[in-house]
Image 1: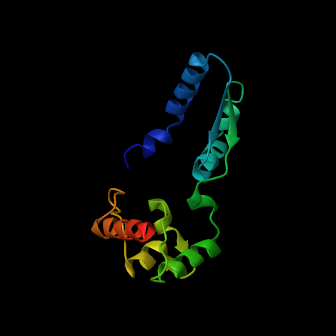
Image 2: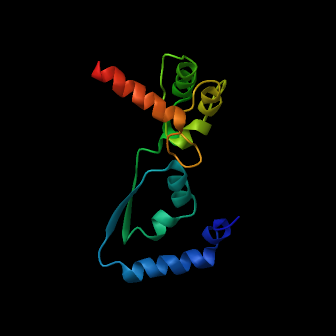
Image 3: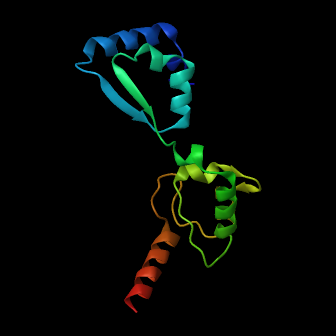
Length: 137
């Protein structure tokens, strides 16, 4: 896979660590928000390696990493209710609940955006027009 091997190359990683040390004009504080990033930083010793020039703050985690399964299940049930509009980041659509994904639940109802480019599709524009109309009444 493109870029995967480059990130697992210990020689390249050491070169990058040296370059970070060389160019750091002061100690930096950086928060990573993805649990996958945190896992990799700890697993491969990057946090320890750069401790003197970079303070890493482990953030809250992205929604994909920290959302409990019960919340995914609730969102899936709500998405099947025609009276409810569920909005979500694209990544959350593929997170499995105990009975499927939000993407599968959305497919059973109205999808109001184009997943491939994160823009609303025609159904999304009709929905917004209807909501605006209803507000003006």
